[in-house]
Length: 386
Image 1 (spheres, helix red, strand yellow):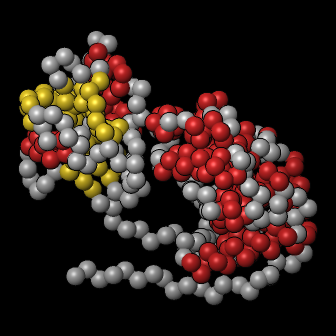
Image 2 (cartoon, rainbow, N blue to C red; image 1 turned 60 degrees about the vertical axis):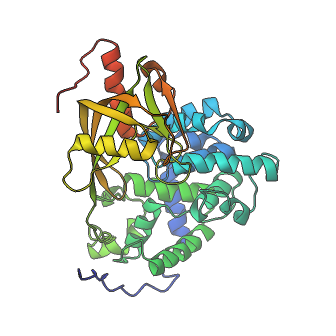
Image 3 (tube, rainbow, N blue to C red; image 1 turned 30 degrees about the vertical axis):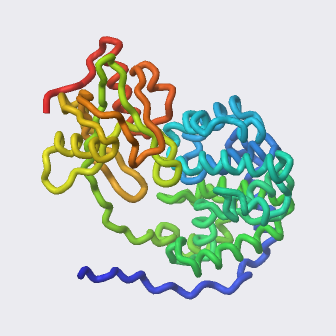
C-alpha cells in the first residue's frame, strides 16, 4: 500500500488584529484603487443580477476569458425572470467553452428560486443569498457589498494571497484553519474601509495585477510598508503551493455514428455530474489493452444498445479537466442495427451535422464537431485510417 503523503506542519497563525494603523492602510489602498484600475463591465453597475452573473463566471476563470461571455449572456438573459424561463439547453449553449458547467446549471436553478421565492429580486440578507445554488460565502458577500454597499468581506484566491503575504503566513491557503484565519483577517480590514465596495475591489485588483501568484511587483504596491512578507524578503515563498497529486489519465474512444440518411447520433449527459446537460458523441474508457475500435464498439453497445461498425479515425485529442486528463480518439461509425436506448444519458437524437452546432458540447467534442463541419464544407477533415 502506498504511503499517504503527510501535509507540512501548519505554522502558528498570527493573532488578529496585528496590523497597526489599519485606517491608514485602508486609505492607502483606496487611494491607489481610485487613481486607476481595470475598467471591467461588472464594475459599472450596481445591479445585483449582473454582479451575481459576473461573480459566478469569474469563479476559477480569468477576467479576459469572462468578458465576452458575460456580455453575450446578458444580451440574451437581461434579468432574473428571463434566465429563469429559459431552457437549460440554451443557457448551456451560451456557456459553451467557459467550462465548469455546474455554474451555469446553478445559475439557472437559482434564477427559478429567485422568481418563485423572492419576486425575481436578489435578497439583501447574507444567509438567503448564501443559500442559493452555486453561491458561497465570498460570492454572497460580493453581491451584497458591490450592489448595496454592505460591509461584508470578500475572499477570493487573489485576496487570500494578498492577506497571507501581508501577514507573512507561510501556509497552504486551502487548509481549514488557515481559511478561518483568513476570513477573520478580511473581516477586520473591511471594518476600517471608508467604502467597503471599493476596498474589496481594491484587494482583488491588487492580487490580480500587483501581488500575483508568480513574481509580485512589490515596487508598485501601495501597501508594501505594511507587508510582513515584503519586509522579510519572503514574498516569493508565500503562500505555500498546495501539495501536488498524481493526475489520472484515461484513454477514451468515441464514435460519430452515421445512419443511412447521413444524420449523426448524439446523446445528452445526465443533468447532475461532470459536464451535466451537455451533448456528446457516445463512447467511453478503454479497458486494459483492448483495441480502440473495440472500445468504441463495446461502449456504444453498452450505452445505447445498438450495433455499429467502426471506420476511419477522425482525430486524436488531448484534454485536461480539473482532476484528470484524457486522450480522446474519435472514429466515424456506421449504424448497423438496433434502436438507441440511453442507459447512461438523459436523451438521444439523430441530427444532420449542420444542426449539431445548435447544441452545447464539451470542449473536446466541439473540436470533433469543427472537423465534421470542415468536412461537410469540403475542407480537409483531418481524418486518417487507424
